[in-house]
Image 1 (tube, rainbow, N blue to C red):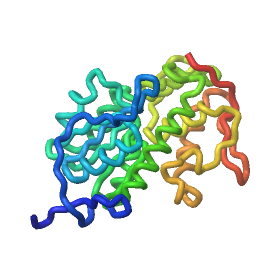
Image 2: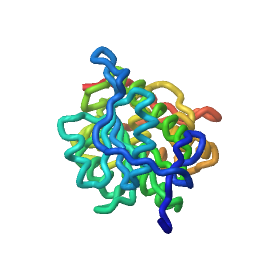
Image 3: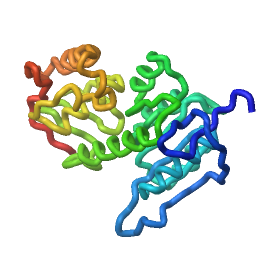
Image 4: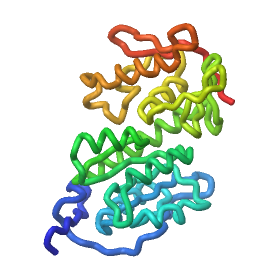
Length: 270
């Protein structure tokens, strides 16, 4: 079919490039290897291209994730209703709406589910916008299936490791400040609400998960690990966070020369 992008069934080839076509029903998939004792992590794959959707599901099944799939925005909420999802692989160009707007809606509702955006849009502005609106990672088509799998593993592992003491807690207390981990906003000592951009929230969340530990630029922005060493935007985001925390009377985020940044404060979760 003219203009149709087929996917490759060989995992060494690229999703979104040439290859064979295979059909299978979409819906819920669960690896036969999972057990009640070893609860698999739950992933929702959203893509209107049936070939890409099926290939991603097939690759993830091999890793023993519990899976559901959807082809449109209207199918997402029914799919995750009563099914707490750990991660969504979200295509941006869907037949009934834009994945960017849906991502923003989820974050506005306080949903902390991990989101990896997958799209044919290769404009850097789209990438920045996606991350600013709350995506945890962004992958451009065509992509290597193993790269998507690696990103999913890394993101879920970071989420698990960062959960630590504060797992299932709503607030992180930083001195007199509180960070609302659900509504993704900062609460000042006088109870004022201080709004954070998605990028600022992600940075501050990573700081509160590892207080008094020097965090390199790569650890603060693992989704941009390849370019973050020369990316000055993180310095601007740190500067904005410092300004918003200025009422504390002392610098809470310190620069450690040639190493990174540190949140110089005790953090408790409640």
